[in-house]
Image (tube, rainbow, N blue to C red; front, top):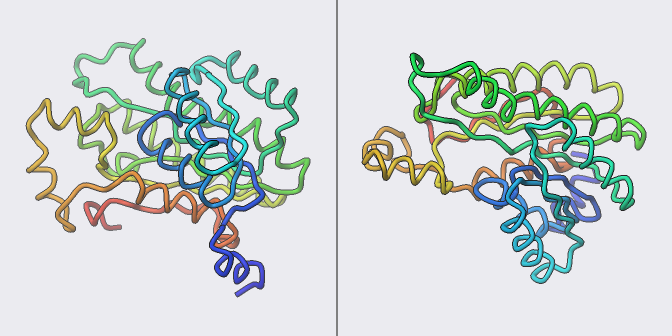
Length: 263
């Protein structure tokens, strides 16, 4: 084990002194990552289209941890908005070393009812935005001789979605292919790219959907560990892949699903 990893373990501050951009930060897994990464010593760039919730979160984290937290409202389905995001980061002189591509979301539309417009919107949010953000971040990381990208895929990307439609499954499978390709191509620049594949977790959106359908008990009982996951458990895996503890890991996909899918 490398000395730098021992230092991380002893200090209990796995990403101290680094800055992380986290998308979809206002709720769910993104919010959990934001709290955890700040607690582990990182400054933050938080990105979400829900500006009011995002600013409140940034204020809470800054007050609780003393970390520098920049909140930037962004519609990640718009390339011009992503361009403005990186322009603002450049203007504020906020270099970062970690990108967590968490923003996403599915719709439970039946395959026979999905329109071309809805297909494009789901693909844009869950896959195209991941590519555009990663491409721009990789250019930034290449100049500073390294960085880490963590992409949020899903159990849907490994199999099929238990709660959303085929467009979401297709996008999340695409994230895994994109992760592998970027990892191979960017390794020469000391840029690591990995993915996390959560199963059903207690994010606000999924809990609401299960309550509407009355499926919470049946979902719990279908998982070998007997429960859905907690967003903090997913955030912990994202932290591992963003930190030096996973310094020799790239192109990997980490399943976090309570045993619901075993490959």
